[in-house]
Length: 72
Image (spheres, rainbow, N blue to C red):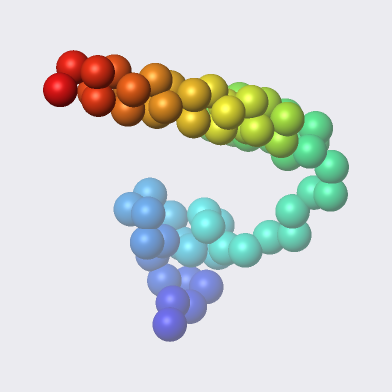
């Protein structure tokens, strides 16, 4: 088991407690989203956006299957 003062597993050369040590997450999505954008430059998707992406992927997979069958 990793201890707080061991080097972090991600290779950042920081101690685990200063890098990936578990912290209490904020309760609301907007503060998490703002935090990720500021810290990592990542825009988090909302749950509704994720559902729409899943639907689009399923539709694309269905189209690909249909085209593969038609080309055979």
